[in-house]
Length: 405
Ligand code: ATP
Ligand code: MG
Image (tube, rainbow, N blue to C red; front, top):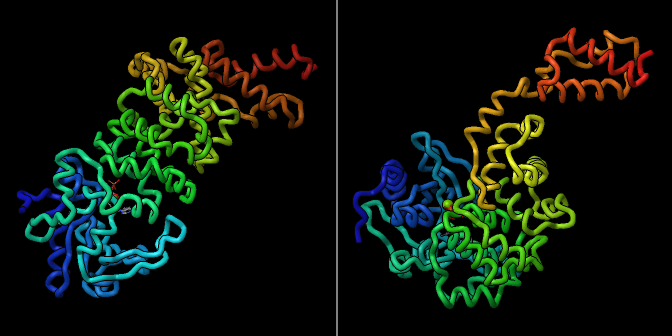
């Protein structure tokens, strides 16, 4: 079967296939890009599989980068695009259910497609647009089925991450996981214990952000994969509860984690998020959103809360509340935010130096306390943001507190 017309992304990449073929090797577009093209979805990366070794590829293109040459992957830079080129390979070993002990370069496309996870991801397209479909991937795509290539039990033993990939594709595509494949996930869910948290997290975040997240999440629950993920080992009930609230669609990881935490309610939210190896930045954002969530559920945030949250996070909070059936008020929020007298501490008309110069007191906690007070009063429009005015009011305050005599 010929795919015509090819998408602009493929057409742009054709010179890569051409160069490899003219040197006497085979080369194909493979994996996610072929799947997404057939689904008429946007193509993220055009990946290429070839019979040439990375060393052979390196001699064919002026600009290449090592992306793990020992595993067979090299990147080629052409017309301002980077293409990942992977040598046909088989994988064997998998003593630890995750990494193959041995990667072997082979010259046959079939061997390479065989090692791929799902039939829809084991499709290839050649230079002239011919679809290579050795595992009925096209039929599965048309039926909306996620089916392991070959024996699902063996495939999940080889690499347990594939089970998580299965449920995240269910979430992204709204595809059913084929019966035997799903049964194998249910049977072998415990193998997920062998997979690094970071890799599980990537798939879990994609699941939560999928267009059909409720569908993917129910597969994640039904397969009991959750039992082998950090902090969720006994979370069936809260996950079900989350499922009932989940609105299409979560657009942001911070919102996703906040939502999850709102339902799972771990004793120590910080530790929970750390166990998923989230960045400190993300953890901070999630904690801020959760802090202001109850207040926002009662009504629009007052100026001081908006000020502390900042506009980008306040927008995320609006998305978050939609999962409780509340209506996001982005317009009102933006107006309120714009109306804040100052947006940050730097815009305050005084700083620590001004205080030291104005009052005969040495350095001490009174400085931070005074700045915080001034900040709050200015944000809530009780005080003017003017240097002399602020100093005068702070002087009264310091005298009243007997810090200044
Ligand atoms: P995405 O759109 O999220 O990038 P993708 O299918 O392209 O989805 P990648 O992780 O980019 O996923 O992998 C590219 C291809 O490599 C897949 O389509 C699949 O053929 C193969 N692949 C990736 N991970 C695995 C795995 N764990 N086991 C087997 N094959 C895999
Ligand atoms: Mg990809």
